[in-house]
Image (cartoon, rainbow over all chains, first blue to last red; front, side, top):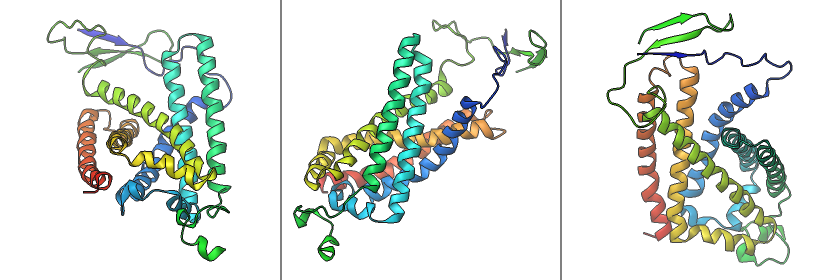
Length: 149
Length: 150
């Protein structure tokens, strides 16, 4: 039995000039993927395995992390790399299954807008964060707030 | 599997003619034996499903974390729902999806860049499943202890 397969790289039309965005998207998925394995495994280990695990997570726990430059850099990198990785993956799936041009446009635009909105919201969450908000009960705040006042 | 090249169509991209084994039995599934089915397809299916699931969790997770800027009370109420028995068990499924997507993603990179990756992609899939199982055996009891206070 013989099967003939056209070479996968056969161009259906001549390559357009300029930046090959699909190629850079392909590279981004792999480069960000490797970094995300480290970032997310570290995130899961510290938040779910160490100490009391998920039961220890509350406002004071997050405040402790967001006032530590190490976790600020870690979480910022995780937010940007993961959300763009995920949105680009969803774009691939839309390209595979959304057959009407209008539906494609709607889904691509929704992905772009939700990604931008969540990147802005997430970045503000990390950088415009007050670990000791005035008027909050002290038992909900991290212990270092007592010495700040 | 014998491979011979013959020039057809564009002069720079010759088509390939493959000698492939005939199917052992007649299948009701169309599409031949080259891609559909087996480890290659299932790794792709699982990678998609876990990817979509993780994506939607990520959207929710960015929103729930943003509550730290609303008030400590608001954040604690919502994060408390992650600590219930039901969500505790759901987190095992979430971690399982993330760990599979991570290890299978590394497998995809190896298939793309390692010169013998394509030849051994099936073996690599079983390595992924083995590493996934080992990671989940390490994670699951520890997490259940936290959730149920054992």
